[in-house]
Length: 264
Image (tube, rainbow, N blue to C red; front, side):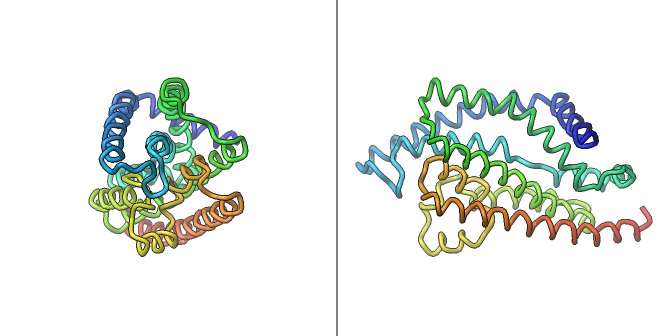
């Protein structure tokens, strides 16, 4: 625990050094919500429908408030850290520490999420509850939502770590990272809820891990699922975490051998 807290503080302090990003987010998030509010209000007024694809206007707005909230919590650029460390050679020092490389990055990432919670998430929650009148779910579904977000943080970390491992072979993965960001925003339901896609696409999304990063946690908050469905979804989410964890461990062994074999 001492090693974990020490590395977490490192990530926390790093975030404080580069705190301009957080203050920019404080401006970007409210502006984005204003845009979505008027956009969807216009769509509902034009359609004349009270419910579109299973969402009322109020639920749709809450969806985007929660989408911003979840995004700030699960955001992960560990692959960029890995890319820079490999190019600069700093990764050698990471390998010499008495903590595995994967755990080091996770602790730093976790510490950065702590800072994010203080600077970004709490203000969003305060504004949502007291100014936007976002209703809270029942206590049970609220706790399940928190659990789903925590699992989403783990899932996104291990998936991003897997993407970062490609830097051991490619050296530069900025292009891959941009494609990853665009594709994940589409498949997570960040742009629009996944229920707006044709049924054939929705059936495919069910077999992919990305809906568990944003779409599923948000709909748990909105109580769109029965309790039995939530249990199944959280179980599948956990399975995906284990899958990417074992992929990350296996590929890292291959990457480490290549890195050491190159004589760097």
